[in-house]
Length: 60
Image 1 (cartoon, rainbow, N blue to C red):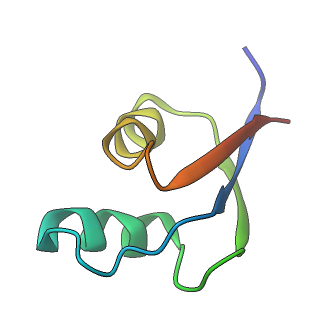
Image 2 (cartoon, rainbow, N blue to C red):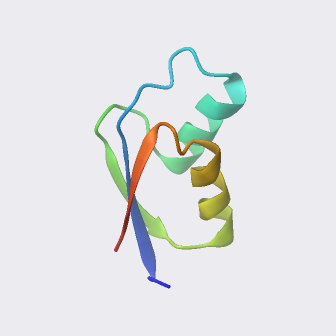
């Protein structure tokens, strides 16, 4: 498993539930097309699974 994970917000969180928007903020995704790199932990993986329909994930 890779040490870090990179993900990009490709679809807006507008119209999503408060939980989904809070998850995006927690991941650091605040604007469209923003790319973030984080440590590959189970917590981050779970958050990404929650918003998988809004993000693109690349293993780094």
